[in-house]
Amino acid sequence: MARLFCSHCGQLTNDFSGISIADLSRLECSIVEVLANAGHRAIPSGHIADVIYADRPDGGPLNAAHVIKVHVCNIRRKIEPAGWTIRHKRCHGYRLQRLDDGQAVVS
Image (tube, rainbow, N blue to C red; front, side, top):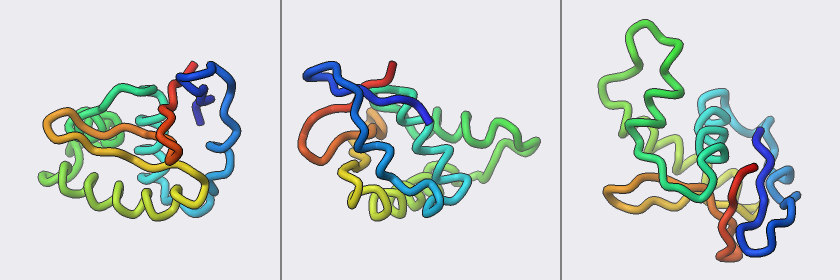
């Protein structure tokens, strides 16, 4: 996983380590990693699909955006107890964010 830093103070946030990777499926873990590596930028579902289905010869499911949306819903439930969530902004994409309104950025 990527190391996350607070965009306000620049300090390493250890809260992300509170997320139990064992609770995430392989695909969910890949989505979280893509979002963590993006820092505070929103990532469109098409780009997430390109990254997580890159190793599949068929390119992934035809409705990849919907599949990602469902997985993001499941991920939110699993990471919110650790103080994180995934925000979605229409026409921009998804981004990982702390629940205390601070943003996460990656080094």
